[in-house]
Length: 534
Image (cartoon, rainbow, N blue to C red):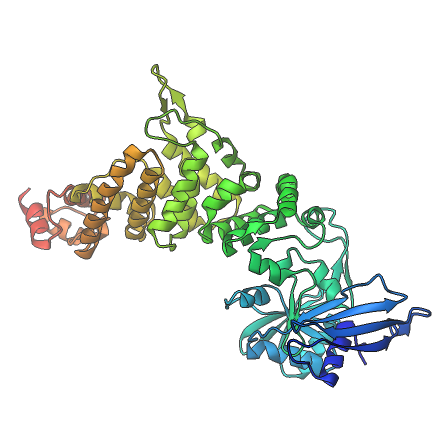
């Protein structure tokens, strides 16, 4: 039979006694002999005192030879609705005599009133036993990470990552543990986790196991490392970025000792795989709070993307800019979220972050002491492609962000001609995406305007007029490319009497230019007449 550990024994005590009502204080004392690998430890018997305090919180204190172990376990009578498919995994393992808890982001998000995070389970069962028990229960199992004690159960088509309790050795490369050791106590497993809000376990009958105060930190809006912060970040330097991502996603701040450690360890991000950094930066951008990260966690972001570093404190020496490049960028990122209602396209978020990344490199000062940034949109697009490519961002997202950055300083006016030319440029750069990117470009230009000096605010109103022209143009069938014309190559050859070849494309291009310039309507009869009589 699998051994019953302390957390299970305390649950047994409660089930045999019944939980007292809130406002009472009760305890029961049990004689316990620790067992390691099935053998009692001689001379190490001790007393466990199970109690419920006046808030209905159940704890476990030790006396006797192990008096130094205080608060061995604390569970709280919290109710979380665990999905039936995940409960099936928990019940199968516990029915076989093992212990199992729901852990990770699902518990964190559920306590905040959210849902949708994948459900993870941790168990006292060795992974081989986990696989055997679940398969015997008719559950599909994939051995996805056996070296780390992980298998993935699939119930009703939904995955439940199930991992044996474990602790981890030193992280020589600051990325992976040198050794993983499986243990029998869930509290040891929770001790290895990154932040208190992620170091909680839940069981439908036993309640919430929260040895590091994660629920309290959720209530206070704080990201705090489990145990000694610097050790957590030295184990895996990516946790530096994860701390910022969680703070952004949850709208939290970072606890001072954790903050001090993450700044000290930020340079170690240089040793982390670029694609892992890209995933975390993507998450920070998706949170909609990258402006907060730029202002409060710039050391971390600059360690992840060194090209950002020159932005801080860079005086633009321009009457159009009241802020340095960093604060301007933060305001543009905030504006992109505000003007899209928090639903900015992914390329727009990347473009907002990197649109002025080339300014320090392109800066010059005229005789009057005024700063200029000639060529920074094109150079910025090139640098953005380099940064995003290095971070393994999808190529389509890179191209679209580059297209927006390249045009973000382009003069555009609220006229049909100007809007059509903008659409054509974007469609040419990213076929099939011209209309969506046109909206994104206007949002970027609007954000750029409000992030400059107060004298530029008037341009934001002009951009509203551009948006109206764009919407009207799209509603009547925007012309972005030759394929949007109401005539085709066959019409050209018939009306002009020419053979297939480059000349056909040249004629179509001239028709497109005339339509974009609003010199011709995109009307079939008008275009055919143009072909016949000119």
